[in-house]
Each structure stands twice: as C-alpha cells, then as structure tokens.
Length: 455
Image (cartoon, rainbow, N blue to C red; front, side):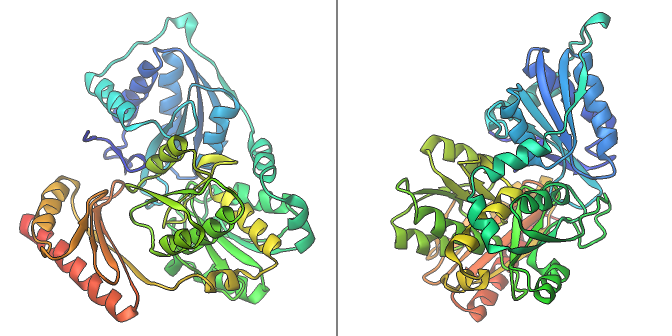
C-alpha cells in the first residue's frame, strides 16, 4: 500500500513546492469528500510563518463544501487530537511539519478516535485527490467557522491522570524549551498547574525557529542543559515543532536520547500495573528490552511512525507506548504521543520515587548510540533500499519490520528511508563507543554506495 503524499506522519513538503495553493485546495476537497461533505472538523496549526496562509485555504474549501470548522488556533498536535474526541468531531486537521525546517509545512489528518487516520484512509484521500473531486455546497449552505480555546480543558485532562498532591509536595523546578513553537504555549501551564516552578527558554512563538532549530536533538539543546544545571532544576524538557515529542535533561545538565526517558516511563508504569504490554517501534534501544525482561513485559514491535504505535496500543489494550525520538503514548490520557503529558508524568515519577532524574537514568542499562542522516531524493529511495538489501552480508541477521535492521551479537544498525524528509536515517547502537562508531561507518558506507550508484 504505497502512498504518494502521506509519509510517516502526515503530508509534508516545502512551501511553494508540494505545499502550494492548488495542492492544498485539492487535498481539502478530498478531505471534505471523505465525510460526504457534511460534519465537523477541528482545526489547529503550529507557529510556522506559512501556517496562517494554509489555514485560510483549507478553511475556505472545507466550509464551501459544507464542513463546519472549529478553529483552535495555534496549538500542539496532541491538543487537536484531544479536542476531536472531547468535542465528538468527525475529523481533525493539524497544519504542521513537526520537526522539519521552517521552509516546510504539511497536514496531519486526525480520525474521530483522536488518532491519525489509517493507511487505508490515507490511500482513499489520495485517490479522491487524484480524481480532483469537488462538491461545493449551495451558496446558502456554506458552513460556519467558530473559534474555541481548549487549552484549559486539555491542561486539566493531563493533570487528572497524575498525582497532583505528590507533585506539589516536592516543589519541583523545571526548564521548558519550547523550540519557538507550540510547546511553549502549553507545557509551562501544565507544570505550573502542578505547582512546579517553570523556567522557560525559546517559548516565544517564531516560525523561523531561531532559538535552537525545531528538532529537539540532544546535540542542539546546550542552552537548555546550561540553564538546568545553573538553576539546579529537577528536570528539563524540550519539544519539537508540534509538541508531540519530549526530550529530557536532568538536574546536572545531561540531556539524553528519547528512549532513555521512555525506559524510565516503562519501568515506572509496568512496575505498578498488571497489563504488561509495551508497544514500540523497531528503532528503539535495547534498553527497553532489558527493562521488559526485568519486569516480565511483552514488547510489541511496530514500524516507525506514531500511527503504528497508537493503533497497535488500541488493538492490544496496552497502557504504554514509546519511541526513541521522545514520543510518549500514555493510554490513561490518550493513545497518542504527547509532549506535555510526558512532562507531567516525568514530574510524577520524580515526586513519587523521591529520586533525582540523573539517578533514575543512571540505573538503566548503558548503550552507546549514534544517529546520522544522508540526503537522498525521494524518487531514489526505493532503488537505494533494494541495493542495500542485496549487499547486506549473508551472515548478518536482518529484521524487515521497517527498513533494514542488521542485528549483530553486540548491537545493531537500522537503515530506513525517512517518511518525512528526502533523507535516509541510520540508527546504530552497541555496547561500546568504538563498536558503535565502527557500525556507523558500515551503515554510512552502505547507504552512500547505493546513493552514488543511482545519482
């Protein structure tokens, strides 16, 4: 089921190229036709400079097709997902390109259950798009647009699933790096609502993302690290462009990859419940395997992408899902990744265990990781993957859940084409830094040889 426009998380492209008025109009009409031109759609956007323009086009086409719009304004993706179920809307639409650079933008389409629409429905939208279906309503049947502020409701929903009293008693301090986008609008409010002192950085909205860029990779979070260390904060948290991910740092200023925090959540959640099913993509660290074995947890592996984790959680009735990029899926709140929820839950764990975050992270099994990106045009990705697959040493175990995961006695290499950018992603993990570097060289060589062959 190969998709043309939808990627790992929605539709994304450069503004003025894929994301242009004609494309946006046709896709809006395809969305309207999926609802038979009646119903209600909740609409939100991130802080990108192109988002208001895109919102005007989508809104105009939807209401002209008879679809009522509830405009939530500039808000995180998980807030729109919460709003869809809270308001019993038929769909949600988020204008965002998440962690992509500022020249990108895109669309995420949320189903009535608050989760991104299934692959099957994505394909149906693309089919309607290609048919250029339009069914404008009569002049006197044009739908309405209303605005609504659901931030207070969303904040209270998160607060309701953590232990507010214990968190308040600890009198914690947190640093929040909003990445100049929507995380700065919500996470500080959630933490303050829990009695936590908040130090905000990069929380002013700016669609150029000048503070540290829009992707919260640990390497780009030096300012957050310094502020956390200097202020003696109990923890620090950074978000991506639409605030569905969270990267954490401890009180010493150390910042760690997302699967370290996910392992902390895994250890705490499954130490307190009987339903021990954990859903995670094939890109996750072996640390989640170690914790699962320690607690008798069943791991359900998925391809990379939040839609796979969310829908697998629903099917398996799992309480927890997690991604190496800092995506936390906590079912008592909602089965989607949610950065503000991750912040509140981390505060809960620190308060309940009466431990420092550095101590919680240090007691996890240690692995060395590296991540790299290699540019590759989207139209070459299939050929490049085929070449790599045919050139993997025969003695290496290969997992093909998503891309190619080469599994060695010590560590692994995951090579997969990005579903959101014209790049290949290489993830490497091993027991030592030396072996990790050597494996990364192998992965880079494989991808570069393939790209050069077809360029």
